[in-house]
Image (cartoon, rainbow over all chains, first blue to last red; front, side, top):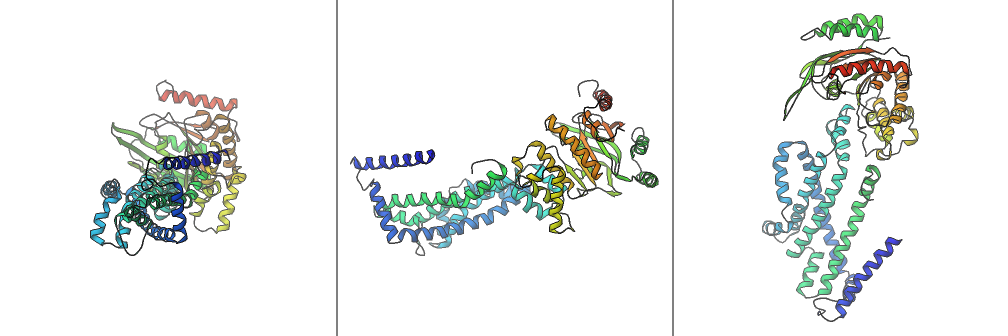
Amino acid sequence: MKRGVIVVLFFTGLFALWWLATASGRWSPVILPSPFYVADYLWSAARDGSIFDATWVTMQRLLLGYFVGVAIGLPVGLLMSANQSIDDTIGSVALGFQTLPSVCWVPLALIWFGQTETAMLFVVVMGTVWSVMIATSHGARNIPPIYGRAALVMGSAGFHRWTRVVLPASLPFLVSGMKQGWAFAWRSLMAAEIYVTILTGFGLGHLLHYGRELNAMDQVIGVMLVIVAIGLIADRILFSPWERVLHERWGTGQA
Amino acid sequence: MPAPFLVDTATKRTPGRNGALHLADILSEAWETSPRTAMPTSLLVDGVSKRFVSKRGEVLALHDVSLEIATGEFVCLIGPSGCGKSTLLDIMAGLTQPDKGSVWSEGIRVTGPARDRLVMFQDSALFPWLDAFGNVMFGLKLKPGLTRAQRRQIAEEHLDLVGLSAFAHTYVHELSGGMKQRVALARALAPDPRMLLMDEPFAALDAITREQLYDDLQRIWLRTRKTIVFVTHNVREAACLGDRVILMSPRPGRIVQEFNIPLSRPRDINSLELAKYASEMAQALKATTGGGHP
């Protein structure tokens, strides 16, 4: 209850400051629109559906790219943890590419795939896959060896050991890796949408980009707020249940 | 009582006899005597040596260790820290391969871990992603030839055996140290192994919990008559639990002495009689380390 009050007060204060800044008249509304203009924009964009269409397009790309990234990153990460040669080779590639900001894939994607959905997918996957790989391999390597020994004694080996011991044992690392992967996918997609204009779908990044082109700062800030909100909601929906499981079973972290 | 027969054969072999032992001899020895004693050899350790290579050089952890464990016997391995007793247990389990010598379980050479020799570790090694019941079920699910209902029933019975029926759906981090080791014991017993290998399972517990577990373990052993090899560095613990206590020397680990503990069970770790055996062993243990503190 008390925490809720503090949060409400904080955000009310933040909006009040923003409003005061615009009301002072020091900055032109073209540069800093008042919160009410932004709310106006969001309301009209909601009414004509443009913000929902853009969100839908963006979410489709994001989910597809993210799941492709995880589907590749997870097994390869496990292989990296199990085999030294794979870790030395693919592992170092992953480490190198992980440090590469995902927006750097955009020029390559444009040349290889043109202004297509494939280019979008490529950028998102490249932004996701390396960090998932590294987090998975790190997780699987950090499993206390005693779990493996206990499993071995009870007759767990091969596929059973991977699915019933290694995967669940590395769950804390996997969840943080997937969460990191999600954040990277989200960032890559926004970069791609801002830089790549395609005709097959008009996403949130495009909306943001055209806001700038049209000098519509209310649109720019409004879309930014939507992007933040989606990030927060996705975190709640996708990762909170996992974190609750971790908290309940491992007794660590926050639920 | 298996002990007299065992000491006979063991003392015949362990000191003095150098070089490799002939397995056929030992096996025939065991088979010859087994009908009379009705206690066939469960596990045979035959001239096992093991060295570890580390950055600082080579360490000879075990040197020519031979011993024989009868079915239904409770054997304690005792020695100063670093004498290779845990390594020996690992080799018996099949988790570590010896450099020289071999281990035979019921006449079959041990080349890897197997379900009939389950290990209980110092750290409970329970899986945190499963509750107590799930942990007990883990090994059972891997045991073929049981129905789902049978497995569940066996798991429930074993949780009951260790007195934790009420905690079946409690996760590992919510259990106390003693409860964790009880669950680990239930998990190890549930698949009905022939042999239980215990690596200082109570070392990390407080004294009161430990004493409760001595009672529990003795009660369970009297009921199930599993063959148990129990590694410890605590002489009283060894005297309290073992039919036979095998004393090992520090590096390179080898067997220096054996003690029979012919006390009746259940034994009280605080009894005077038991203390006599314990102090005798403590003396011998001190001697292995050259009089210092073990």
